[in-house]
Amino acid sequence: MRFIVIAFALALLMAGPATAVQKPNRGQCRQLTKQIETHSHTVARAQSRGNAMWERSTQAHINRLDQRRMKLCPDLYSPSARAQALEKMKQLAKMAAQAAVSFFTMGAM
Image (cartoon, rainbow, N blue to C red; front, side, top):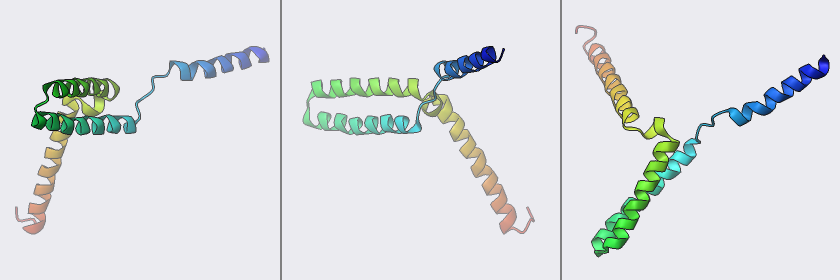
């Protein structure tokens, strides 16, 4: 009986990490963002030099990096996540303004 319990516990321990969904490292997301930013400067350089092929290939590479970033970090860089973060910042600014008004008017307003 003890052997069965130990075998079952080991089976659960071995299956746990294999079936778990790994969250991406924020460093990977930041690295992709920095690469996209760097390559956007390269696109501007290609435009200033008039090299259309260089511009197209660099833009295609930026699109591939952006798709990879959206797949790897959907909660950080999706349009809906950006909109939610902007809405939270607006609410925070509104609350801070209300607190400042009541503080500086000594509660008269």
